[in-house]
Length: 96
Image (cartoon, rainbow, N blue to C red; front, side, top):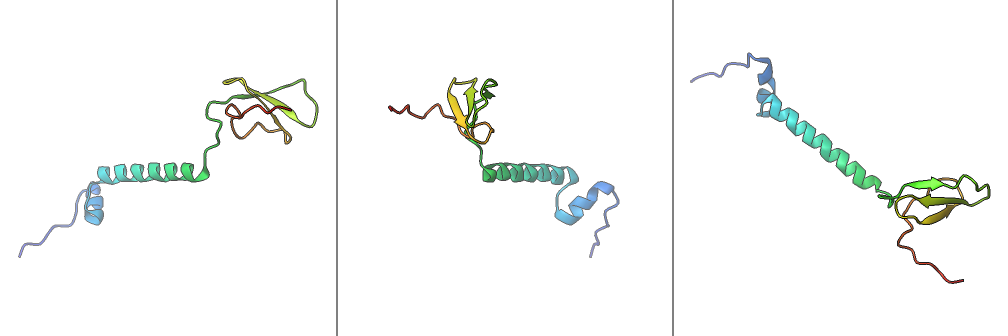
């Protein structure tokens, strides 16, 4: 019967524990971190303002704040002073 020698090199610890080398274990860790980051981003949800860059109208001092998108040129209004959460370019104009 032949006995196996214990690992003598510092890089053999990963092979002894997991059956892979330290470099492969590091690559698997990076891939796992990327997948966790991607999953958290999808769970958090992306706002529908991908191409919009909102600029506040500085002249307006009323309750509703006027915002204009520099990418698509659409005007939007908010009451909380924050930029709109979604793009308004696909909304239809309504007749009064």
